[in-house]
Image 1 (cartoon, rainbow, N blue to C red):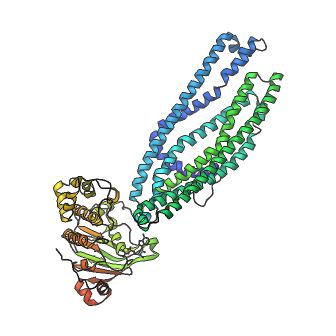
Image 2: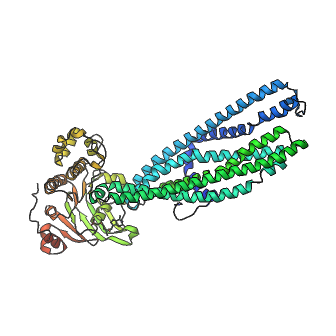
Image 3: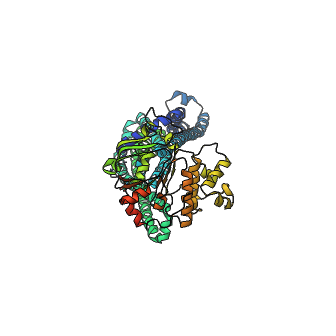
Length: 615
Ligand code: ADP
């Protein structure tokens, strides 16, 4: 990422990054070639009309005013032969035509580039979001949600805006500069050189201030990224923030960062405004030079008064690109930084991917086998699982338990292929899961996480998420009954059509969990994985959810991660994980007798005095 650490100092240093962004965006631009070509043609036409702007006035001065007072002719036969009044009329109309044409070409170019930019970046944004959805856990667990959102919304938006508000005007300005210098050289090269005298000085100032503006702008962008990350994190944990009563501290922290961003914004504006005023003074200096030497040339007869007028008009316009250089280059640098953040994401390759000849699977039996599986986050440097070998038969109801951090969640993550093992094999129905298409593998598994993900939609829509599309109302109700969710759903104002708020904020933890179970039931998959589904529930809810779990487990290979050993009692088999290994494997009674880690956990929980009745 260019924004961090590395200092970009000028447009020239921005260019490699800009090129990388453009190269990456080129395929997106290809379908809009026509639009870009049309826009470019309009752009050149607009520049030509801009160059023509002072010419009607020049003709009036040289051929109408001067000829009428008898002082001079023009030397251009065609123009001299025209009656004076006709010429005056043609020139007057010419002004309207030239300005009208310029307005039209400007309009066409702006619209064409805006359309192309918007279409391209709308596609880029949609692709980026899809790409983010497909990126593996290894990526997401290291990324900040706020920063990703910022890239998706604001960085893409900035690219879009810059294409029209900086890249386009900068191109126009450069074309105008080249065009004007060419015309001036043809009219009078000595005067042109005089006019260009302040240019190097201006360029130096512009580079210097531009550099400063870019540094400030980049800082501001980084700051904004941090602010977005902070606000996203805070909003996600707003319950905790309010419960701890730390709104004041969190608010102050954010206000501080916001204030800093404001200060940097003002600093950038002050620098840009300063540069613009400096240009005004230098333009005045150049104008004075031109007026002085130009008038001498006119008196000498080396230049016509009209030519002098063209010079003066061009001069004003010519310095604008230099004046705007700082402004546009800062904007371009910002957009390049934004573009690189987008490209960096787009180019992040998933490590968990389908192999080219991945099998599509359906109707698996649900036999699971891990052989000598080791895995570590951070490329296996600190292993979370060591040499795990275990075989689970179809329909077995397994409880996975063990101390926190022992590797239980990691174990199920490997089954879901959220990560690939560092070594060893994970097989389902005897087939290495790396040979199975990711999507079809995950369709065979229902996963009930600790925190149920509910979307802002109706209960029904939330229930059928991930189920077959042709699921019927009867099936939905059956699943809800199985999960003990039907009764409370019917008590909601609109039953199954009740809209729930974001993250299910209007439902209790127990209700959310029951919706998750109903959702898993609708999925009809041979494998069911539940990650501590009863954590944080009160006794009543816990009992209801536990019963629902075992109903749901019927006929499916079930892996239930839990600390609650009363649940473990009812499982066919228990895997007790400790320090990334399966320390014990057996039925509850056997493991209690073994007097190992499981028995210790069991005794710590009071020997399961109030056992929940199995169904
Ligand atoms: P459990 O589910 O038993 O509480 P986990 O499987 O979550 O344990 O964690 C096992 C080990 O892996 C722990 O030491 C934990 O710190 C580490 N770990 C878990 N998730 C990540 C992650 N995304 N990145 C790095 N380390 C992780």
